[in-house]
Amino acid sequence: MSEAAKLLDAREVRQVRFTLGPDADGEPSIFFGILLTPYATHPSRFANVTGRVTTTLFDELQPFNRWGLQPYFNFTSDPAHFKNPGWM
Amino acid sequence: MAFAEDLLKQAFLLLNKESKNPTQASLRRSVSTAYYALFHLLIQEASANWRRADTRDYLARAFQHRTMKKACEWAENATYDPAISPQVVAKLRSVARAFRELQLQRHLADYSNATRWDRIKASAKVNQAKTAFSDWKSIRKEFVAQKYLVSLLSNYKEE
Image (cartoon, each protein chain N blue to C red):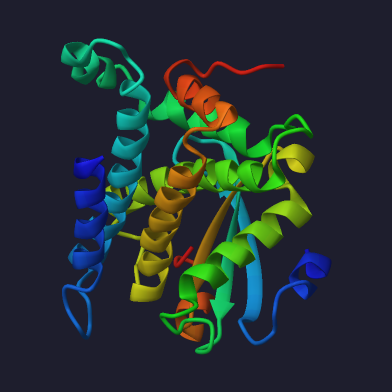
């Protein structure tokens, strides 16, 4: 996980965390929380950044093929949200 | 595609309904609407292949959320023929991932009062739907994309 996070652009991503649990269908899942920088959330680049981060983490970790986990990705730029266990 | 595209526009309108301090209602409805935009886009695309136009709407009712999700799980993680363009595969995976993820977010947005939304979190999901629309439009005529449409109805897959 930390190796995959190193591939993300530090100008865009401050921190990544994850939790494990079932999704709405009860399937084993991994929920990523991604704390973005203000630079990343600028409207001109926001969609590209979230797409790129998702693809990088998915391709590097391959959660389903390796561990049978469905990956879900949540983004925020608010550190308080990011630290809140209920946010993801 | 007009209905699906109208839903996507509506998702953005809801996302930006309040310029400051967006309400949970607007953000949650925005995410839910984004899911349904992609849901209807894919169903309309699949149904359009049905030769009899007067029965396409009935065919569209046969699609089921859970079957579509399972098909998307497969499409996201499958190993594709190396002869297929990597760009096409990447876009197909992006569409499938968007559908699967948005389905869960729709569930949370519609039912979970414990889940809090901020504009960034909701915006990421609505933009994911928008990207899926554009990715789909660029691959929709590819054979692998058409097979994916069939899989949404039946969870058909090649082992």
